[in-house]
Amino acid sequence: MRINHLLLGGILAALGMCIGCVGANPITLDPNAPEISRLKFATRLVARLNPTAGEVWIGAPPGWSAAGSLVRFTVAGELTRKVRSLIDGSVLYRFPGDENSVTLVEWVDQVGVRHSENVPVTNASDDLDLHVGTAGLYPNRMIADEDAIWVVNSGNDELASYDLVSLQKGDAVKTPAYSNPWDAAFIEDTSRGLITTLFAGVHMFDASTGETREVSTDGFRTFASPNGVAILTDGARTVQSAPGTQSRPCGAGFPACRAVVVNPNPVSYFPTEFGQGWISWIELSDSPRVYKELNARWLNPQYVIEGSERIYVSCSGTIDFAPPDYVATALDAGGVMVISKESGEVVEAYELGLGGPGPMALSPDERYLYVGSGVAGRLFRIDLERGMVLNSAENPILVSDFPGTFISFLEVSEDGLLACASFNDDTIRFVDSMTGELDPFPFFEPVELHPDDPDALYGPQAAKYVDRGGVEGLLILTTVLSEFHWLAL
Image (tube, one colour):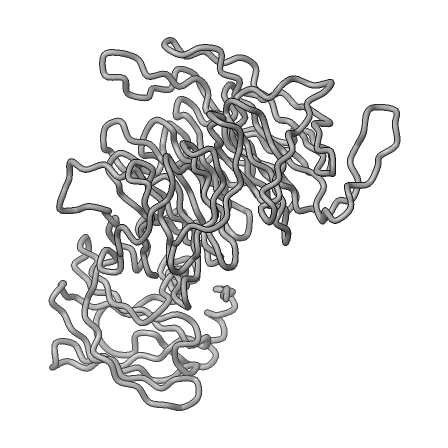
């Protein structure tokens, strides 16, 4: 549930309500304050220490209590503070404290039942369960379904399903031997989709039968190490055929008929060189084929995502692993292309500098685009509404300063909580995608996958927000260990 903060402030003022009725450090009702947006990131009543400020924050999500009801906090068994919940039933409060604080919270829920609970101060890492399941060899991408998580296991040449709760392996779609599958996407509400392979082109598949069909490039350039894929959910029912011919309908049973695949087109390694990269438009039919191409603005297009009206393609530029340290280094600038779904043409382009732009994610309102660096623990941020780069390689959001790391994935929840990983130090961090704030409540500190073994490397590669048996959380996939890890939210 999203709150109109300006309207909310006016309503509360009119009703004479307050969040911090008694005590120091009440939460402000300033509609521009980041505290307001933090409300939606608590999925239950939770208390967390903000070590920078030396404060304990307690928050609960919308629907937790009756609107505007009195909530009593008894801190350290001696000082009682009274606040009122917001009109959506959520509450947020802070007070001076430490990790040993225990607070008695008393409140009335939406049906009038009184509750009382002792709430200890916890850390997000307390909710982390490691090694909850095993994937295949060199897992690369994840696709979430209602009942399963699908994983592109590059080393096994397959797209395999895993039960969301047990994480036991189920059906698998095989690609050609040694094809190195890279990314995949499903056609909405079907078992069909596309899978890219670095060495054997692009294939349309049916997960219910395991059948695959190679996408034809007849009349166009052969796929060149195809990476990212996006199936367009614009409801189109026709594709543009060859110039001068009539558009024709998609194959029967396909609710979407178009997809895009990006081609980095590597020419050599050590030294690394890229040729002209491009985007391939694909007709999803009984005989899948490329029907259009568009050259990339920068070298090395690797990732593609879609919004409601636009397609976003990130181009990393040349990234090399030069001796003697063989650390990934950006040799030339990269950026993001914004492409109209309707016309298939570039409508905007944002240069991000020497930062190796890689994985992308949109805020829920599609105003902000986040881009992870392929050569450092940095995030870039673009305000699409104003057409401005807010954080480029010159002034990035710092996720990790660990040498040689990079951002391996970006994933945004429906409420706008962006999760990202620093690959080489196995750290998960969160960002408020609406404000750009790093470490919002209740994720004040990074979540480390192995805090007791700093020399280990799990390699977080992908993540998805999912519901596992009624518990919401972030399912994390690591590629070095080929394992799943679970962070309950």
